[in-house]
Length: 239
Ligand SMILES: [Zn+2]
Image (cartoon, rainbow, N blue to C red):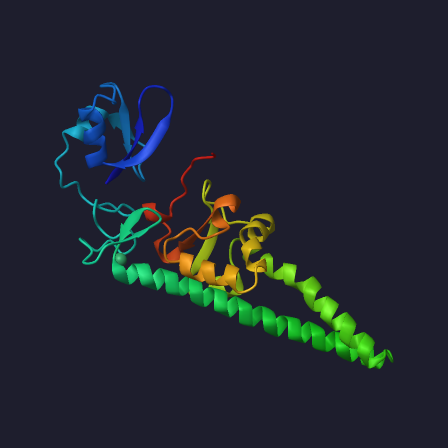
């Protein structure tokens, strides 16, 4: 169970685990009048009632016990890994990364086929219009270049590209939790313009959670199946 804290200065921070809250209280950083609100709840309670709660608080839906896998909730994970700063089991860690990697590969294939179709239609139209062959070829190449930025918009349909839809992952605004639109998609996918290196870095970084581009676009890829777990919840911070 994790709690949001209000230290009587009007600011809400957290969520924190019970251990952290005990540490705050122990170091005197917590006012005795501070209030706490369990994650997923709307009820505020005095901090004293949280501090005196038995250590084995019941697990409610959408909450993860301290130390358990932040995705599947397995307690305790045999070989813990870190994803978005949360502990997850090895299985979830690799399954989530593989979903993101597969989604990317599907998107590349989808986009390649789409470009070929557009190119094919364009070529056929050009031939019908009696355009010389090398003009068609030149315009076709230019068209290919012009289409590439469209690929960067792939996550802009409510955070879901064809590959992401297929793999059950989605891109959200890390602060508000809202699915991203075209602008944020374009921003986070800019590193894909760096041939090979950008794509390779991203495929490796997907393991840790945030990858190149997520920082400046304020985006976060989530596993829809576990969308309610704290690990995939928005930060709420607008910094
Ligand atoms: Zn797990």
